[in-house]
Length: 107
Image 1 (cartoon, helix red, strand yellow):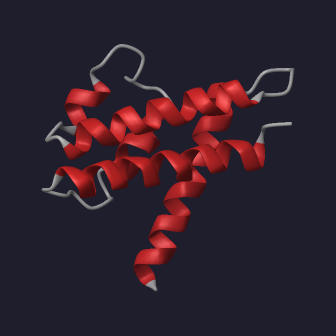
Image 2: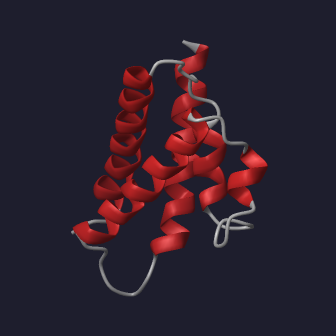
C-alpha cells in the first residue's frame, strides 16, 4: 500500500511538471501528448538499458526542466534484465505518462 501511495504521489508530481512544460494559452492536442509519451518511453528505455540519472539529466533540454520528475520516476520503477520485460516496462511507463497528459490537458 505504501509503495502505491509513493507511485501515485510521484505521478502527481510528474503531472504538474508536464503541465508547466506544455502549458500555453491554447489547448494541448493529442500530438503533444504523443510527444510526451515518446520522450517518457525514451527515458525509460535509457533507464532499462543501464543509463544513469545524471546521464539523462545532462542531455540537452533536460537539465533543470520539468522532465526531471519523469526521470526520477523512471528510476523508481523496476529494472529488468530480459529484453521482453524491459520492452513491457517501457510501454507501461509511456502509457502512464501519456494518460496523465490526456486526462489533464488534451481537449
